[in-house]
Each structure stands twice: as C-alpha cells, then as structure tokens.
Image (tube, rainbow over all chains, first blue to last red; front, side):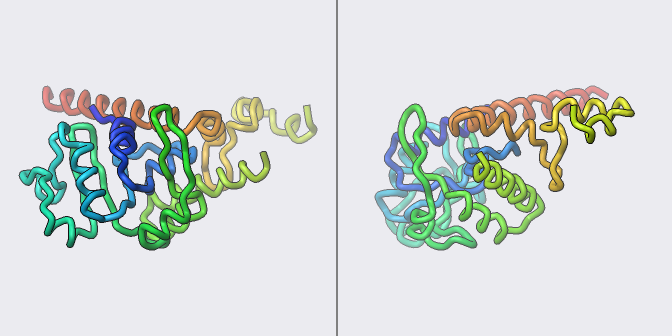
Length: 159
Length: 71
C-alpha cells in the first residue's frame, strides 16, 4: 500500500527543511495526473538529512539504487551527498539538492509558497517555477504536466 | 440555448458534448471537468485523491497479473 500523503506528514512532523517539487507538487497545485513518488528539494546539511532518516526510520528505508543497503547515513555521506533516492514501505522519496530550471535549495525556497495541511505547514514550488522545472526536464509526461499547469494558471487568473 | 449550441446538437455526440461545456477538452486535450473538480479541493484532498488513484491502479495491475498467471 502506497501512502505518499503519510510520507509528507512525516517530513513535516519531523521538521525537515524541504520544498515539495515534481509530480506531487503538480498534484498539490491541482493537476489531475497520478504520480508515484514524492520529490523534494531539501537542504543537504547533516542535521536535515538526519531528520529525513528519522522521519522514515520505521518504514524500512533503503537506497533505491542499492535496495540491499538500508539507510544509515554517516557524517561522511552527509557531507558529500547531492541527491538521496529512497524506497520506503509507503513509497518512493527522491531528495534533491537542486532543481533543474530553478536552482539550488535557497533559490527553490525563494520560489515556493506555504501551504497548510491538517497537521502542519509546508512549502511547495510555486506554479511558475514548477513550469520552468518541468520544461527543463522535458520528458513526455513533463510536457503534459506543463499543459495542465498552464491551464490552471489561466483559470486562476480569470477566477 | 445559444445559436452555436443549436447548430451543434444535430448528432448525439455533439448533443452530449454541448450538455456541459466543461466536458469539452481544451486545445491541449485537458479534461476541464476533471480539472474543475480538482481545483475545488484543498491541496490535502488532492494528495489523498492521488493516493487513492495510485492504490486503485496498483490493485488493478495486481489483478491483471493474477489473471494472466492463471492462463
């Protein structure tokens, strides 16, 4: 059973410094396409990575590229990692140090908006930056997502 | 009823489409009725709807696998 919403709740409750990006951010904006993972851009500091590790500790997190390798971050890894792709019992979480088309975590943060959920607040990439990120990726499904996001922008402008 | 709609209801297909303009896809093939439904929800409700759709799709895929494993 996948539960991307619960993964989000854990990130928020664990005070992880992150911005929701990618397909789930598009869903939050209103896109009706279904996505299979949670993509976040986060600060790759020792403390923040440890908070991510703690948030998913009981969900058997493993590195997606090496499924036999449980998540057990060392200080050396924390200092050198640029991205962290995890598989958990509730779904996949991709942690990115920067977003193509937008920039570093600080730039991504500047282009984010705060959203309130029943259990806390989090930041999601704003619609213009998300369009830029999707255009930069330029895969087939990114192109479709951009069409939805542009339509949502148009509808918001007229409502 | 507008003149345009009257002109377009001469076939069952057109009559169905003209029952609600929201059913008509845009130039970019987006289903506006689905989009309107989504925009009427909160971000949290949209995320949960994604989870529901994802789990339903997974259960369908598992059912298809079982179906073909038998044959």
